[in-house]
Length: 52
Image 1: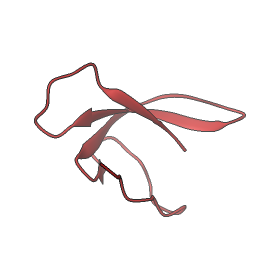
Image 2: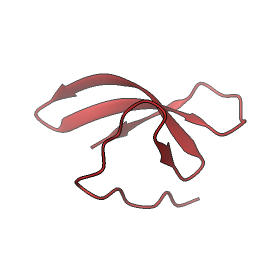
Image 3: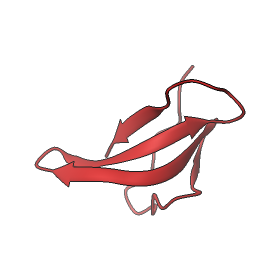
């Protein structure tokens, strides 16, 4: 499955949808960008993270 790219000016705040994923929290940031925790729409698993 391919998740659509995110425009650079799009705010990735909790509740933002990225395809079947929903941003649930910001989990960190550093030299390689920001990380956010995502959960899949209606699916149960350990979750995933996205680096921006």
